[in-house]
Image (tube, rainbow, N blue to C red; front, top):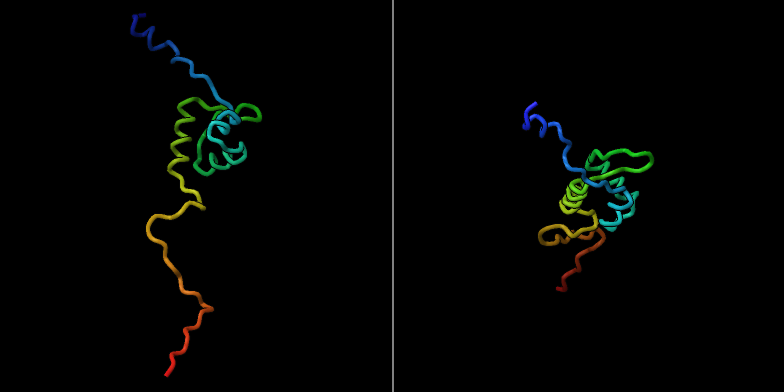
Length: 95
């Protein structure tokens, strides 16, 4: 074998893994909420028994996805629209 072929067989550098709880803690979320979010964005994590494992690059990807997803309670872009109240009756004009 040549030196170049030997290099191709060498495993990539080991990237330490993070558990679901560790990633949730970093993102300041509850683990159950993180699981729901991962399902919603269809993120394929490594299944390890009763937890999920992530690499550091996975964490960055999830963090960026959280940044791009808008919360339902977040204010919407643009000016607020005032909708008419169906119970409101205009006052009569005096003659």
